[in-house]
Image (cartoon, rainbow, N blue to C red; front, top):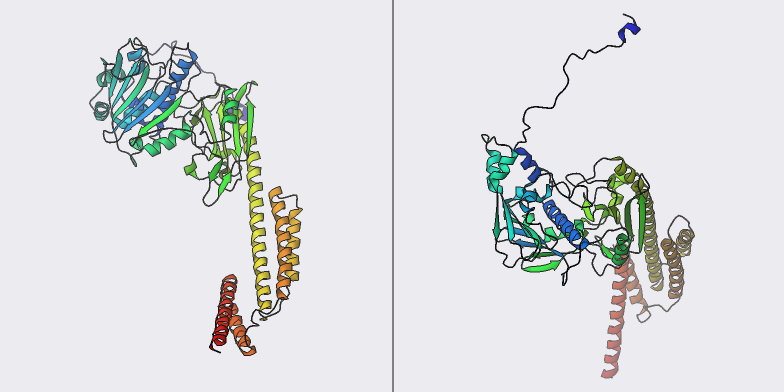
Length: 537
């Protein structure tokens, strides 16, 4: 068979009739609900992010509407009842209208927020807590005149039916089986609010869902809240972000362990490292355009001393990405944009995504793989390259500075040690050449263009100190013999003992102090004996 015959075109005959819509009933099984109430969230604490972001949307909607007389500042409150194993998240946003309450809170993947500039829009986050509690309860009203409506999801019954191999009803039937709605007394509820309550919270890991410290630390990183008042760059960042429509919608308060505290972002002027503190010294802000020249994102980076990887417990390490002022993913999201991934953890900053063309994925641990997101990552890679260069430069400078300090201390110890031995007549060494060599090395660093200004200044200062110390050492050698108060025989004995001590000493500086102490003590004893002889005469 020839090549031409082997690759001859093949004609397909369409013998089938015209296609038609599927006629059988579409079945959506019960297991979909299990995926939406647990499997989507790799970290249980993410459920707090889901509820806080919905609360923030409600507050934004309230603030965008007409201002009511005597309207209190909106807020979000999280109450943790460890003994009762209950959690309640409440916001004083718009609440849900009476005629929409039941429909909105039983809908799945049908959020009214879709297409709006809202944080949550898939209509599944509200059920995130259902997989972690015995019962999930929603309450709301829009005005004092309305009753408080309450809708409950029976988590225990849900899990029973999910395990029941004989239960064959579809998703709609399952939801009707495990939900109930009623009107309850207004009581002490606010005039306008929405809240979600998780009853009978399950125990997982270190009981993280009821751990006030863990919840507070997590939300301080991911929630749309204010900076601490003592973060001196906070106001400047706020002004910059506000110019682009990014704000903290309301205060967030955590009630746990018998106390109440307002949560703030974790940033500060001083970043505590393992041994030292790195200090903030410069704020850099930038605007990044998208594919169609619209503003795709804005961001800021807080420059500091770059002493190494920032400890995880500070909650501030890494360049983080936020959308709607809610953190997406973790501090490691942009690691791969750095030539050395470790350098991301040396940095502090945020990228705020503004364009609707870049959308968080369902798990909110990353963004949907769109051309707009790929383009933004390319621009962020350029920023990562600049930060990597700065980190490397600071690392090289710091290593160079540590080397200079070690050389300085070693040479100073030598100068002091030789000067000490010379004073006691133990030996005579010349340290001039050693000092000159070290000073020349320092002066070379002080004039180098490859190290930072801080290294150059300290190298010059160390050279000056070393030269001054060498002069003082030479002067000390010319001073009177410290053992002149002893007889020649005793002087010789003392010198022999001191020489032996110096030879076996592991720490010469400690040996010097010990010898000076011995000599001072011997001198005082000699004076006492002299006074005693004078009195006896």
